[in-house]
Image (cartoon, rainbow, N blue to C red; front, side, top):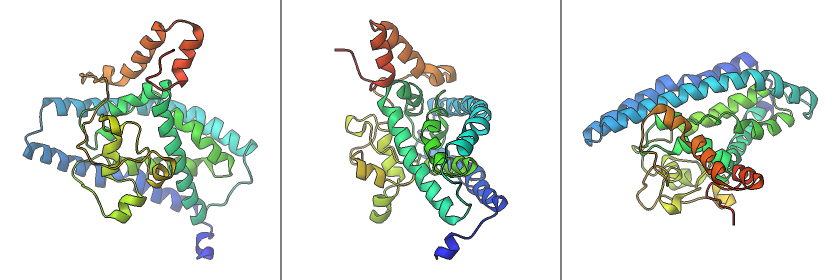
Length: 292
């Protein structure tokens, strides 16, 4: 087994399989499943104008997010990541099954902290609130991104690069975690077997994460493994029926308002605070923080 896990792999083969799991999943899983969800909405007489416009707004935010990510990719991947890899990392690790598996586990753990940070500091929530602002829950919501959602992961993935992992492998692992998360945005799948529910993040766990019910706030940050939440005290099971959305409803499907409302709310909050210190604290304190 050790010999198998440590056997050198060719980059072309690794990138091909990540392409199958990451990129093509949109074609063979996500879009077909979304169509199935639309059929279910129609059967339940819930397929209405609001849901359609909400889904279109989700698509808009994804396009805007992707444009920002491309710009950041040129700057961060080709410059910062590789500079850190060459100058600040431990000895470079070989490409084998061991490094792929451990890189995915580290990317998953980094995602937990990235996700938790975006919930617990003002600037993070200003961008991540976009993802939570939909009052629906389907696979299109997985693509509902905020303007700075591509920035925060950089802070948490650079330490993985510093451990000696190839920057491209780190990015592929991060996308893999995100794709896994996409599959959790559904009401069609109920609770799975206890062993799966205990170890892995599931649609049930992620429905809780999107709940506006008070007991569901800031829970279940996991990407792939729910054990991070269980170990770190942020796990909450799905018991009460989930109400989706945020505590201050957006009440709009205008794609520009959806994409920018969190930043706008943070700006107005900072504008209303007295003193430079309080304005800066609003960026790093929890979203509901108010000066004493």
